[in-house]
Length: 515
Image (cartoon, rainbow, N blue to C red; front, side, top):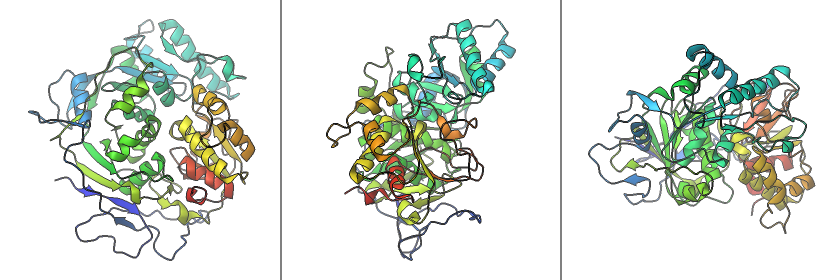
């Protein structure tokens, strides 16, 4: 029988378990001598997680489920069944899956290409030149010769194979001089129409799960698997069981999807969804934009998830208008589908959270970390570098009217996002753009669109942490050395919390600037 959980972090003296309710708390992590502690505003326990009742819901949630069928399956099982030409599947089965899209980038692309040539032959042709998407994005704006050579290898291969979708960059001095260059692969895949409901998308990057926001099966794979897919167009996959997360309630104006996924990871831990699908439904999810849904699915891998999925709906279909010439057929979980567990959250009861060093599940309330002094703020990446992420940050800066107290780095995910920062007016600003607001606030950038310092990179990478500093970041991982220096401390946060923290020089709850 599936367990139902409904949670919110709160400072309270109430017992952790209340009659009729259940709650989970993330494991405690030993604090190192150089790690600043989060201090609450009250003497109550900051780590207590209290169950709160979710509002009653109707039995059916169209369009996230379909009616009764002979063999009920989850959305992930249905997608894999269709891709493997099977009528029914069970979790744990190993099946050959036909792949709709394979993505690789400059870090893993050369290795994938090397394996493809070794196993299929030096003169072999890829299985389908129109189903392979190659996106330079990780180590781009650097003088590192090896990093530059990686992009050259991609370019030579794409020319040799006549790959249709290669988003090249040749002039590193001015990314705008490269009309084909896009930026961060996961956001580019969505913007360029490579994400479609019901399909299977694999990529040589763990955050490929980002595309699950479109109601498709998307997951990261290694170079060896990718080299095989490149030549065969299929891959042997094990069908994952599914965890379902039901998020209901009105989203408070101080929360973003980043708060939701950090809350969930803190709840189930970084191993709580190991090789499982994470399906997100509920009125809160249905109210999210596509970019916010991407944030939710992007970080399922930080919980160990194989993939994340959100049922496609009118929001999905509208986003895809004009982006893809290909037809697609969405699939939905059956009403009687079996889930390993169901977790219920009343989102209206949640507060802004952060993930403290050095794990994405080291969850704490932002307001309980108000005494943590920081050295810098980073707003960018596939998780937190989309247009709406920057609009959220600009909203905080605009409401404050003050200048940042620490270096604040602005790194758009893609060229389209970069253009939005200079073109889209921020609501309530009297026509000002994000770039104008960022400049007035004293931010650094916007920089050239790429993965930037999210994963460290060569020493000359923009905004890389080359000193043991404390950083509030909208990225996805905060392991030691993730953004550069191995002694750096990273607090993962939403764009709201990141911008608020930039204005004070301390980890700050965005409600201090949102009224």
